[in-house]
Image (cartoon, rainbow, N blue to C red; front, side, top):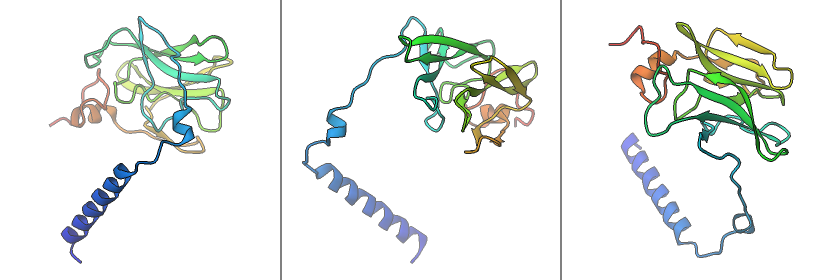
Length: 187
């Protein structure tokens, strides 16, 4: 079977299964009807986390990581700094500032996340002089370590990370790289 035929069959099957799912008249499950939510951050500043594949909650579920910024509705520039922090759900949603970042975007934030296997160490990207770095902070002791590369994704055991060139990403995928440093390989 040729590639085009396989793709057409795949698309047709996907459309049929989607139609079947939409045609289901059964009531929503209890999990959907009994769900609740509450707002844990408040203005005037704006809060968001970033990408869905990062650990936003600590292992206990008490602390929620967040980015904080003073503006919306424009792309970040080289001089825009965000606050990096966490919300303490057990203490009336108290904002706890952890640091700041000069390397961020709206899509992914500064890659802020809990390090896998740790309920006290977080990592995020920043800009230091003429290069991007990552910061690892112990939220209890406030011990801060700088790694001379930014991170994109951390391995499940927390021992390794992918470290792309965010200057290049900003050039070839606007909105996903970081402002402030020129791509040395720009066309």
